[in-house]
Structures are given as structure tokens and as C-alpha cells.
Length: 90
Image 1 (cartoon, helix red, strand yellow):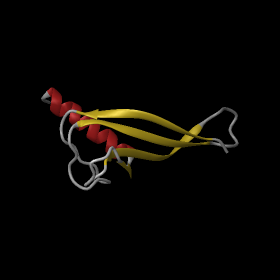
Image 2: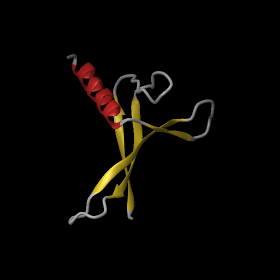
Image 3: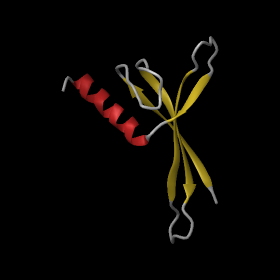
Image 4: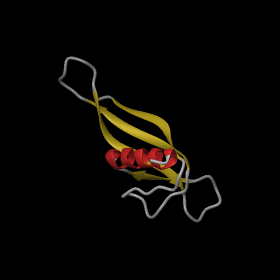
């Protein structure tokens, strides 16, 4: 089975919260890592998401260490949408 990892970033203009995180997070750009696994037995190459990780700065450290948090993709999408609406003044 072939797995793949996709990395991108998401940007929040305002503080945000996610169910998987302890408390509000500051605005900024965060690395998003999506792990996918190949779907076997289909006639075309296809993948399904197995994990969505949001990386945040590690607490109580002065280094560039990050923490990875397993997040619900729907919760993340809702937070991004709420951020866009808040910035637009809707």
C-alpha cells in the first residue's frame, strides 16, 4: 500500500479555537500535514485521508519546536470559514 503526505499552510487573521487544541490560538500561518493512504482494489489511483495534523509552536520553549495536533478536518474548515467571515465583517 502506498501512503503519501501532503503539506500546506493555513492562515488565520484572528485568534481561533479547535476542539483538538487547548484554548485559543493566536493569529498566524500554521503548517497543515495530511496523511493519505491508497485505496486498493479500484480501477484508478485514489487516496483517502487518514490523518490531519495542525502544527503549533510548542508551549514553554524558546526553540522552534512544534507540536502536532490531530484535528478534525470539518472542525478546521469551520474555523477557517468563521475567520474569513469575521475578517470580512459578516
